[in-house]
Image 1 (cartoon, rainbow, N blue to C red):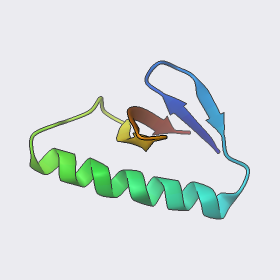
Image 2 (cartoon, rainbow, N blue to C red):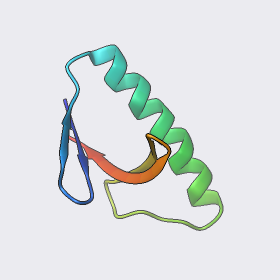
Image 3 (tube, one colour):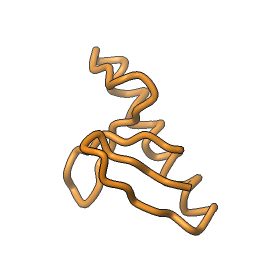
Length: 59
């Protein structure tokens, strides 16, 4: 799986369990942000990576 940031840098995730974990964490952040009115680009997820807010999409 690939995790692509909005700036188009790709992070390759080999471990499927790790991928699902990261996706789950990002989904939780994504849902919280939607509740407070932050809507990222369609198909993208917003989450924290190394304590920095990043926007990703999975492919």
